[in-house]
Length: 98
Image 1: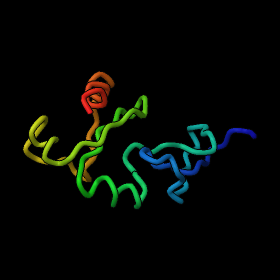
Image 2: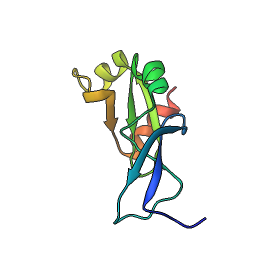
Image 3: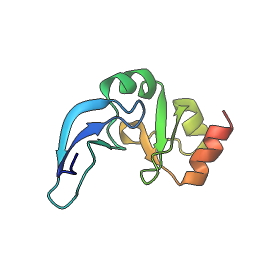
């Protein structure tokens, strides 16, 4: 299958298609593209209702930690949309501590 300027957006958590179509005439996409800022509705309800997703947009690595843990570790204010970005080393440390 040839590459295209159109792609289906995929959830960074479950990797399922969200139903959104992304287009960019400057970028050649694969069939599905992970959008690090756009979890699907099911993952938002299941995970982001109780926690914050911390993701490395370059690698796609992510960790989800409870709101209380985020406040204790990082900042007393939760990030907008409960999504934060971090370096790979921080995410791997969070994953290994679970």
